[in-house]
Image 1 (tube, rainbow, N blue to C red):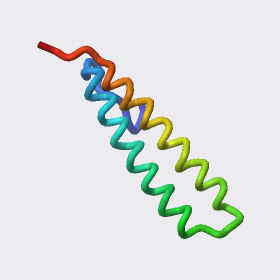
Image 2 (cartoon, one colour):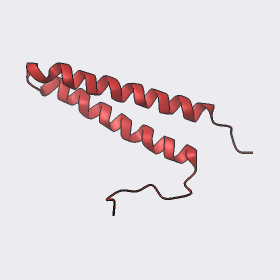
Image 3 (cartoon, rainbow, N blue to C red):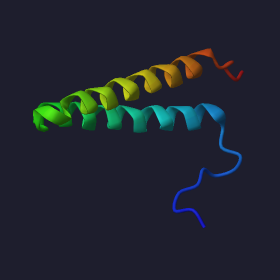
Length: 70
């Protein structure tokens, strides 16, 4: 049994908005890590920050492209 599961039937827009929120949090954590990690880990931390920001931008673009109800 998984620890976390997405409830079946959730609206796609809500799922994407939540994913964007989690990715924003991941980016913030990675940015903090970049500032406070040892130099030898900084490139990896910057990569995590960058990839999180790219993923969030993709999710937000998907949300913006969804047809609006009504």
